[in-house]
Length: 158
Ligand code: SF4
Image 1 (cartoon, rainbow, N blue to C red):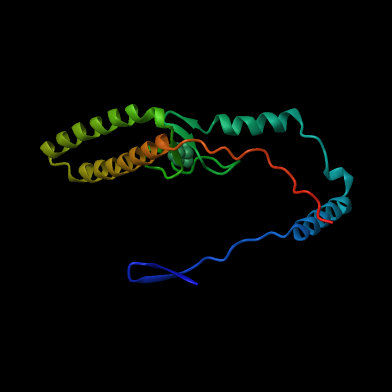
Image 2: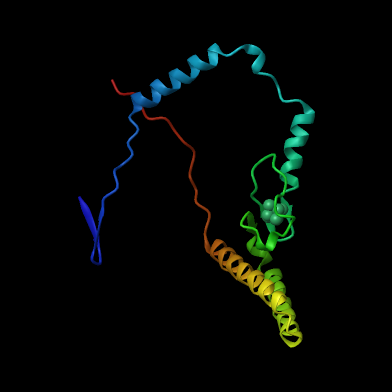
């Protein structure tokens, strides 16, 4: 089957169906593999490991929101958050982004007067990132949370 959008024909995507017995077999396989692993590998987390884990997430909080870099990795971008794709802006920081944009526009005017062409290029690039992040944060602010509910198991088939 295909769906038509204008002049293009897109194939209908296949449905993903997870049959109950496939899920059961997979769970059985996982339990079997877990039973084969040496018990020594199942150790409790030490307080130091837990503290290190929490510290990593504390260190990902930045002025404008949250840094989404992978766990256990340092900042690779010299904390230039405004230009970084890893920055997830908190919508409540939109006024701060507006201040940053205003400041950049003023700096650009100054750079134009002095004919600092390299500086103008840099400011233009930063402005583009700021505006993209403003749009992303505004879109995020309009989204309402999705309630996924509590998962339940299906009744057994006879
Ligand atoms: S520059 Fe990027 S990776 Fe570094 S702290 Fe900021 S958002 Fe995270």
